[in-house]
Image (cartoon, rainbow, N blue to C red; front, side, top):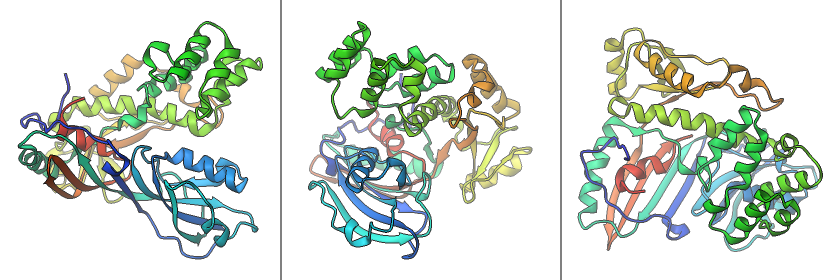
Length: 401
């Protein structure tokens, strides 16, 4: 059974992302390019194109490595999005050349500016959203207004979005298998179980892989699935499952490992839905303005700061050098870690893929909340801080799978 912060209000039902225009996202940058420096920043609008696919297209057109392309955050594929992308460009790649790049109609370069550093993951303040929900219930607007009133004062549960867990929702299982050095299972999870795959060509490749027919699996795997094909090609070339999995590249592998951390954090959010805005003794609190964390010794005194959204309790993203909560909050975290039984040394076992522990607030503040109706389409507008997901707010409103 699904759990919600706003269980006292029925959801609107409805459908999202029927078209890319139904999900509009604009990045709120941490800074604006200065106009000087060796890096070129591109302000790009794209439809039906993931950030990683955009990086691949830019690298191919400019004959660069994907690692030379920087971005602050991953954006949804089935959406209309605007974001900055940086290019660590050699001298022969000029602003004019970048402005003249030709893509299909779904990708537009809106501006090109220089800056002194490469754009890196997390270099953004947040994202601004304009979303359409189709076919909501007749009193959907009233329900939404009631729900938004709660979210405005209590905060939005800071759950990770479904995209963190991948198309089949198993990215965290892949990350767990990698951390446990079970690379046979990791490879199987990456290629997929045939019964869980709807794409017929991918399904055939997964079945061939399960049958031990690597040649057929490589042949029929869809060409746009570059990472899966790279894994299969490595196995066909005689690589061990470990070498084949690690050949997928650090960006992809970090996504899997991060998904493993994310599902443990999400479990903590769900366990504290009734107290997202309440500090417990021993909690690690986050100061929203700076991101700094501190241990709560006197929850009654600190609660006044939580009531005005200056601070919030945090949950654990497990990894090396973890700062663990004490008291009641610590008991919850310890129980989760003991159930996982993940050896601490696993987080440091792979060169270049070490995972450090983090603290993440259990709730975030949504700003600029607004809603309206147009025919049977519910229109929403809001902004969320970096690292938070619109789907966490949407699930409270729609309340359906």
